[in-house]
Image 1 (cartoon, rainbow, N blue to C red):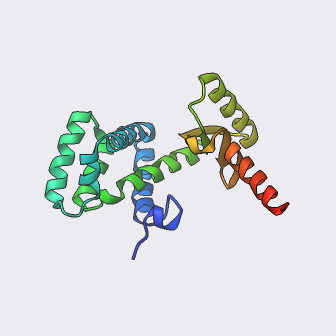
Image 2 (cartoon, one colour):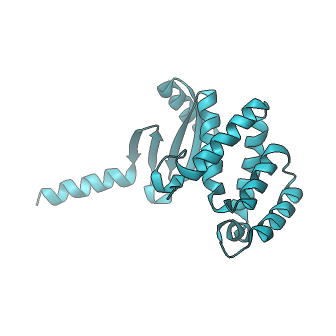
Length: 190
């Protein structure tokens, strides 16, 4: 049985990786990599906003015909056209909508790789100012020696500080981790 990306840990594994790779090659051949990425990003944003659309994408209860009709309406309303729209339609027709979010993530990863961009996941306790965000991005760019695409996540449980994952490296400079370390040290002192 094929694995999807979330099961294997790699965004390019399984059905999502195969579909994303095929789309990327076609988009590259047609010189439409960025246009496709924009269309997929727009659809992904719609998925994030709409519980009904998420249900349509995830539920096997809908027939392929129903999914295709609904997707057509969503694409038309969102103004998603061209290769990205055709790809989403194909996913619906082939009963692969459930894997579309992983396909979109895998496509983004292929685009980043092709442009030499490194992805960094940054978690902070609260929304940073634009100046702080630019400083973080500049620091990460210096460390990575490449352009950095920030995936910013707000996690109030950190209390303060920052957690950065850049490639296989992770730095946890959160106040929560420091407090836990102190607590463990105090327990050992008893």
